[in-house]
Amino acid sequence: MSRQLTFSIFRYNPNTPEIKPYMQEYKLTESTGMTIFVALNQIREEQDPSLMFDFVCRAAICGSCAMVINGKPRLACKTLTKDLPDTITLMPLPVFKLIGDLSVDTGTWFRHMALKTEAWIHTEKEFDPGTLEERMDNETALKIYEAERCIECGCCIAGCATANIREDFLGAAGINRVARFMVDPRDERSDWQYFEVIGSDEGAFGCMGLMACDDNCPMGLPLQMQLAFVRRKMAVVGWKKR
Ligand code: SF4
Ligand code: SF4
Ligand code: FES
Image (cartoon, rainbow, N blue to C red; front, side, top):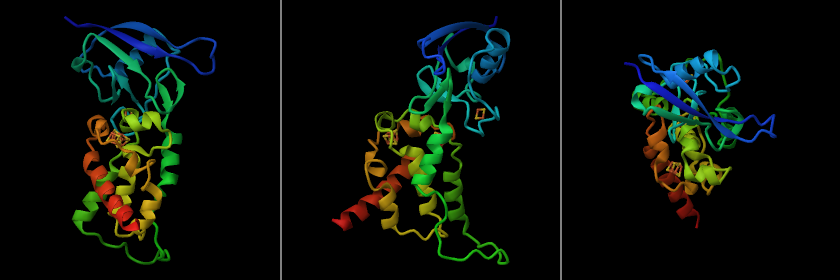
């Protein structure tokens, strides 16, 4: 016998501020292999076409379907209803600008973070399209690949206490991005140059180290390790600077 699920969903449209935020309930019969993403589509198709939420890939690749599911930031397309109780509460990710209901604008936050961390290879070498690609040892390539697996979903930011109280905090996603360039031998930035970017409370030193980011990352990125790596490096630079 299939379960009857109750979805309690946050509703608010910033374009109609006269209607205050509220929670709306929908009932749905659980189907085999149902994800939150499937349930939301079914609700939108069968019960309420006005419900706003984001998705693109349905395969945990694009990062756009993140929301707070029963109190935890998660991807809707990766979360099975069978792993949740009969009542499921859905809220939009905090920290990011609300577009409406469960839809938030993570793009602006991530663009700002990429600009602030100068997330591109810094080199004095002239680009020559005629030369062969530079080779890299497997160990270094794997370290870069590991950090590049971030899908910019925002789950680590939404669950981070510091990011929730400091809007300029770069969060685990930002520090992971910096770690990606630190291990890249093509990037010629010195540790001091990195310190100028993240050697403050907005970066490595604003982190309280409680590791909600590591727990919430749907891609299983080793955020704890990346934070420790960057903080250690920045602490040494800071200590030498004194
Ligand atoms: S460990 Fe740091 S970055 Fe991660 S959630 Fe806690 S404060 Fe945020
Ligand atoms: S580090 Fe993980 S949780 Fe944070 S944005 Fe990237 S994929 Fe999402
Ligand atoms: S829809 Fe792309 S990650 Fe969920």
